[in-house]
Image (cartoon, rainbow, N blue to C red; front, top):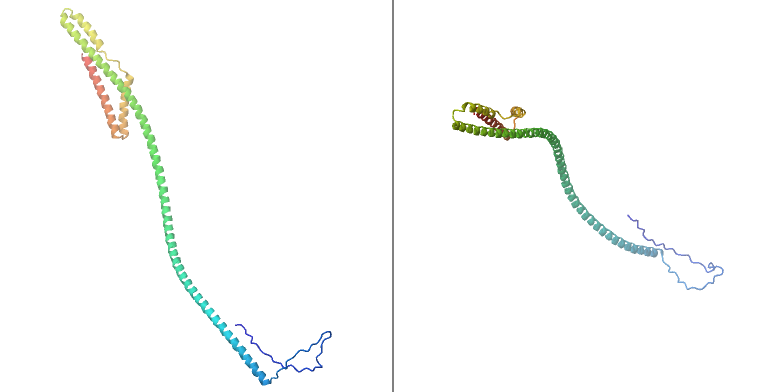
Length: 280
């Protein structure tokens, strides 16, 4: 609290000085100044005036203090109201921030759960990726091995196809040669039969000897390439062994069967032509 100093009035009656006691300092000119005669107050009057003056001063001081107190109270009330409003606003802000903090905590918990789930899922995907990579490597190695085997089989089939082409050409050549020989033999036989009918029985012995020579020449079998025949037998045996050892596809089986049937039919036709030429 501020300390207030109340004014005080000190009244002192100066003693009356004699004229002789008044002296002027040297070098100073004294003048006659009119001086009012001091009023003579009694002690009671002086005390009353002092109290009255003091009461007026106290009253004015009291009014000043009341005004100051009113201003201070008004200022304090205004500040209190401002502080109350500020506290209310801070409470509302605190409430909002508390709600936002709670939402953020819930969101953090949700994100943490999602992160854990994503982490577990990533680990599972990594395991699945490693397993898939391992399986794919195994499958690729198996496929590469199968491709190498298929390439080997393809080269073998190409070689066999080339050999079969050569053998087919050889068999076709033999068939054409056999047909030509058979036709030539039939024509010569017909010519000899006509000659026999025309000439008669006189020259029978000589013609028989000539016919025998001709039939011997005609009945000679065509030259057969033994090497190609042996190759044909080996290929047929190899194809049989290949069909037993492996399980080819339906198309390869049908193609092989057609080739074997064609070769067998060619062999049978050649045998038939050879037998017919021998009989004639």
